[in-house]
Length: 337
Length: 198
Image 1 (cartoon, rainbow over the protein chains, first blue to last red):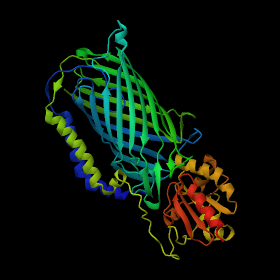
Image 2 (image 1 turned 180 degrees about the vertical axis):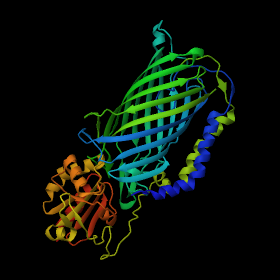
Image 3 (image 1 turned 30 degrees about the horizontal axis):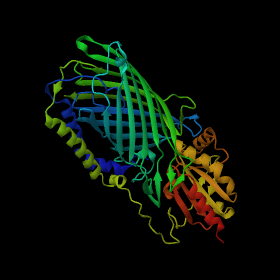
Image 4 (image 1 turned 45 degrees about the vertical axis):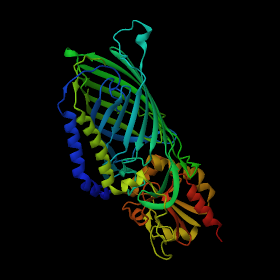
């Protein structure tokens, strides 16, 4: 089955020049020299998604992610292996940018490009294409720096609290496009609106970050499944909720550059899908995972280089109806003032 | 992270350019990718083709393609022979994946028992051999089903099969349903309609 998704390959061929011009110009922008200016502090960088540090104007971010699949949890949460001879991987090149709209408001846009490389039970599948785009907004509830080096008063315990909203835009290749199976997809095919909360507190060298997110998928009509037209129906994916709690330790180097080590526990759930208003009992999932991360930031915070390893525990009950994965991500951010 | 005021300032055109490139890049890629716009503005129009009765093919209304394929024990299974002894045949195309697992479990618990005169088959189109199909069947716990070892994917190709695709074939050999299993509702609806017909 080598060559499945050839339409997508043709598509990539057609858009290849656009893609590479886009990527290289983006990298060029990220690396372009800038002039001296002012700056200051806390919030951002360590959280999920793109968050602009306080008092900075905009940011360019580029990351490369590799996700390997290693079995799955069934509907009862039992760990099961993939068939022998399987090797599933997804690679993601993710450029993104964040921009300060007002002193306490910021927006971000993330546009991943995805490669799927799958060998499943002896059959090979390969696809590449745009992933789903994420447009996000954050409101910073604080006006001053909240990171401290020691706690002298109750005021020093005040955390940085961000309130956010995000829209997932289905620019990826979904099961409702001309694909043959889920190995070919790079997106979900649904719009989703998320409400986000992030609470971050640093008392150096330690920091705690808590993220909470709840997303609602928009209902849509479906008239095609895996490339085959079907009797149309309306589908709405279940609500998606996620929380994560991260602990960080920052090591200060000479000239005030920093290395931050972090450990994060996350829990992701998606509720039941509805089909023409009926609840689909076969839908929904849960996944718990842990992430170890390391990042290097220059003293003026203009550059951050980061890497992380996300792992789903290979244990029963740590997920449901979802693949078990390991993800590795490396990336760099450039912040401007 | 706190730091001193030694940051750098970028020109305004840089931020504007960044956003223009991100937005334009997204739009160009999406637009150039044609059907990707289907998801941005999805259609509910019924685009299924209507097929003449008597033609053979994988679509609803067509005569189901004949096949003979070994089951996971190596015993040949022929569609016409099965239709001769059952009111209908259901083919579920499995990859032994998480979604397939959920579908098969639902099929077992909520469908099979309600239709004793219908033959249900799991079509394994990924394992590549009879022995590997048997291994998958046993390891995933579906020995109560007959698994067809579609090693050369002939059945999958003939039925436009794929992960989770479910085909219902009446005893007259006509395809009544061929789409993703989802919640099994449409399969049961089609089975009820088929078995209620005089």
